Length: 316
Length: 168
Image (cartoon, rainbow over all chains, first blue to last red; front, side, top):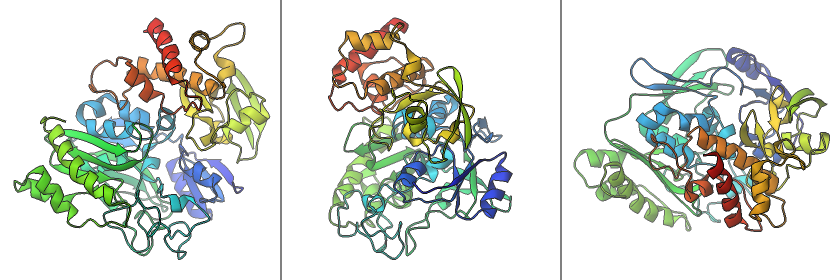
């Protein structure tokens, strides 16, 4: 691990001010992903701003019947919240499908959204990776790419976003609240948080450098059933090969793109009376494979109709 | 960097490099070698300790992040003269072979049983709004962050179940 200096932020305003003034600074809260990457020297911040103790760890009701989840709330506490369990079960199911009990006790809502890809070529510093070393190439394109993206990939990067929680938030139509480096608060849909890789896979979000996520806001729950289903190589404690969040008529897919993938073509087909199988076929019309990840297309084709049926109480 | 952590009930002040993980602070600075370094990447659970009562991977945390926290390692869970019920159960059920993962397994089980007592859900919880019953599937799922290379899992499940039964 490279040497760095450390401070504990006194306030969110102080945190973004410090981030704006300090070269190569990063926020840390749970640290479960960042410290792992720092040990491998994939992340090499010169300064860490600990935002984990900021008073942003509450889950509160919003006036319109939704919930505001403070960015520093642990994954465990979000999943266990009685209101989340009763009104947004897809979110609890997604969170408990990720990591282990120990990791969920440490990881925070904000950091969960800022997780970096688990692509093996991103992690292996002896291999090319445009995300880790821009311009070096993509080792996954013609490599061991069973875990790679089938939607929205580019010739520069076929990595996927690892979050389960973000997939549920995408289906629920959540928003993200932030504090910019100049101290301005803003809010925008979570679907506008993450980027597709394009030519610059090292830029993973639309956040301004030094911008801090302060909360995730859930609108009132959509009408209709909710469910999160995840397919992976082990029954527990493994990254997904494909996952789906159903929230009423909304569908989001996980582990298949550089961002949580809202399946808008499938949603439109469902809304116009298509069967679940026809709907996901419409979405998969734009899927592509890179040799070893074609299995994900088959998985998604079977997983999504099963999840839609489950959400609507028609078997599992 | 000067850091004060209450470890097993005693305030300990350390001067650590910012890079020092909580695990290395316990093992190398405080010579509490119960928590083990397995993978050092949060994948095996051998380093599990309790921070303010909740289980975490000590390898994926910096000591300086815990200034002011209360940490319980296996040395604080029980002593040779006064074993914790889970330690007795691991002996009774023969729930280990090499023993390397055992301190992490026991600390994790202490935290896990508290999570069940607080009715936290897992992916095995079918009814998210009801009371949780610690079935074998629930127990295995909740302990999946602790790997046992000797594969003593049946005995580990039996040991934890015997204690959960007493306290439930």
